[in-house]
Structures are given as C-alpha cells and as structure tokens.
Amino acid sequence: MKNVPADMEGFLSLQPWWRTEVPTEIIRSREGVGELLHRLEKEKKNPFFVVDSVLRNQPVFAPLFGQEALYLFDASASEPKTGDVDTVVSIVKSRTTSHDVVVGIGGGGTMDLAKAVGICLANPEPAHVYQGYGLDMKKGADIWVLPTLSGTGAEITPIAVLRGPEKKLGINNPYTAPSVAVIDPGLTSGVRKYNRFFTLMDCYFHHYEIMKSATSSGDAVSDALDGLFLSKGILTSGVEEFRMDNAVRSAMASILGGSSTIGGRVGAAHAISYGLSNSAPTLPHSVAVTIAMLSLGDIYPDGCEDTITFLRINGMETPKARDFGIGADDVGKMTKTALGMEKLWQSCFGDSWKERATEEYIRGVYERIVSR
Ligand code: NAD
Ligand code: ZN
Image (tube, rainbow, N blue to C red; front, side, top):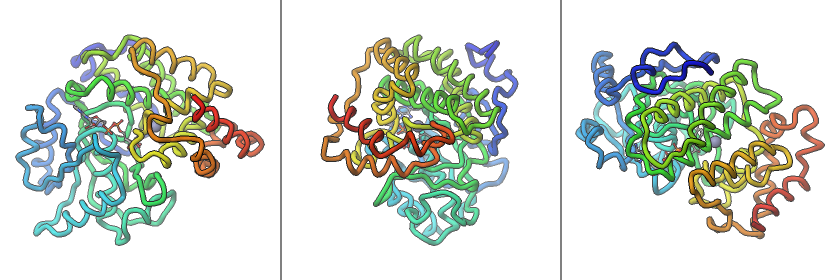
C-alpha cells in the first residue's frame, strides 16, 4: 500500500482505499459527533441512539448524552446478548414516536447491538431465533454507526454477532449492514491500551485469515493484504499511547476488515475461537482468537509467530484459556462447536477440508490450549 496518510488531512483527502463494493456510505470527518447529528437533522430522521456508556466521561461525546431517545450499553460488562436486543427493541417499540434509524456509537459490541436492534424491529420473533445465515427477514430501521474503537470492521459488515442462550452466533443478513458510517479516528483517543491492542489483533487476524483463505474473492484478498500491512505496522510500532497516525491507519485497516469480510471469509482461528467463547461468557472475542492463533502454529506458522511478536513488543501477557475458567472438561463441547463451523474450515483447508478438520484434529488443538 502506497501513500499511507499519517494525519487527518491526509486521511480526509485520500481516495477510497478499499476495492470490494460495500453497502455503507462512508463519511470521513474530523468532527464525527457533530457531523452525525447534523446529517440526521438534515435528513429529517428520528433517531434512536445506542451508545457505549463508557463514553459518558469524555466531553467530545456530551451532545449524545443529551439525547432523549437513548439506550446506554455497558460494553465492558459483556458482549451483546440476544436478551439485550429484545430489551432495546421493546423500549423502541414502546415509545410514542416511531424511530426510522438506530444509531450505534461505540466499539464492535455496541455497533452490533444497534445493528441487531435495527433489523429486529421489523421481525416479530426474539433475536435468538434469527442467529444464523440466510434466514428470511424483513428490513427494519436504517442503521447508522459512529465507531469509537477501530478494528472489527463492524461499521461495514452485514453481521451482528450476539451471545444467545445456546450459542454465540451472528445475525447474518444484508439488512444488518449500516447504511451510513461516520469515521472520525480522533474519537478513539480515550481507549485503554488493552482494548486498543486486542481489537487491533482481531483486525490483524481477519486480514491474515482472509488472505490465506481458499474461498475469498480476489478483491477481498487484495483488501486483506493492505489491511494486514496496516495492522502489522501499528502492532509493531507499539500501541502504548494514542497516536493520531496510528489512529488513522487503524480506522483504514478496520474498514478494510469490513470490506474484505464481505468478499472473503476467516478461517481456523475464528472457528476455534467460537468454541472457546461458548465455554466462557466473559472471554472477549479478540482474546479468544488470540488464544486460538497461538495454538495453530501447524497451519498458520507466520500468523502464530506474529502473534507472539506483537504480544512481546507491546508488553502484553500471553492470554490463557484457564484465566477465563476453561479447562479439560470443556474440550468435548468446544470440539463439537468448532466442528460445526464448516464454512470456516472450508475457507482454511479448501476442498480437502473434511479430511483435515476432523474431530481428532480439533480436539488436539483444544487439548493444547487447555494444557498451556
Ligand atoms: P468492544 O465494543 O467490546 O469494546 C471494548 C472495550 O472498549 C469496552 O470496554 C468499551 O467500553 C471500550 N471502548 C470502546 N470505545 C471506547 C472509547 N472511545 N474510549 C474508551 N473506551 C472505549 O470491542 P470491539 O473489539 O470493538 O468489539 C468486539 C465485539 O465485536 C465482539 O462482540 C465481537 O464478537 C464483535 N465483532 C463483530 C464483527 C462484525 O463484523 N460485526 C467483527 C468482529 C468482531
Ligand atoms: Zn474476529
């Protein structure tokens, strides 16, 4: 990737840097909060806001906390649950005016909650019924987002990942994609190092796995290669302090994560992470994928090596499954979950995936993970 901008000026004047066609209008701004509110007013929208409650302490977000149609989501307590979606849907439906747009403001967790609320407003069943792929769903409210943490690509993807009563799985539907994303890299300045690091790790894993995938489109692989270059650069330069040049590049890498996900697919590390997440309610997604990648040196040697390097350079402790309550007793259940991730194994191993992603192989990976 050439001419990577190092500041806001360069970011605002850059030509679109992604190749895959995305369903989202991407608005770049140095005044994201004001631009979002101005645009909503100009378009005569009646928004309902879903906002990460942690932002309350940061003055730049103050205009949002004065809004009356507002739900505060505590993303530090848990990833979004199907029950959270049902709660917010019933709040929105009980209001006297009808809202035509749900606006998600926060990291991937808060944006996914807003995305799920947007679509579920027009679909009568509880949210957990819609976890899956290719289900027949109606279009709900419009979905707009303002990311305050870069890396997941959730600002672009037609996926809302949710923890449900039985499993962690997304609502995967074109009507779950945001129609507008306002991108202001400066809004990420208050993020803790731990979150900046692990969310960028997830960004790196998306690009790495999509780049290696046997089923990704050519454009998705090109987007993933650029995203890999950007995320590797940031993770090797160190994420200790907020830096505007890294914030700009993180926002760019995150959008590439969204675009490459649309035309591509992640692989084994994400498949293994879903088994881990299902056995540990408090395990963040990005940490789960890190634990998975560290045990996949046989199929992703350079990805595993990079992960060790990024942890070391950034002075982060190596995360362990047992710190999240996962032990040998969980291996059977985790193996069953990961075996069900057929599309991800096909993405990783190509046509011969059934011979390679066997129960024995997957069990072996989890045994390595719990013995660390
Ligand atoms: P997150 O939304 O869970 O936030 C992590 C932490 O950072 C939280 O404590 C949050 O309060 C805090 N935070 C966010 N913005 C902040 C700011 N500006 N200042 C201070 N603190 C801030 O983290 P994430 O990694 O962005 O998202 C993870 C979620 O996204 C998971 O639920 C995962 O499953 C999902 N995900 C979705 C997609 C998708 O395509 N939809 C892709 C990858 C991951
Ligand atoms: Zn991920």
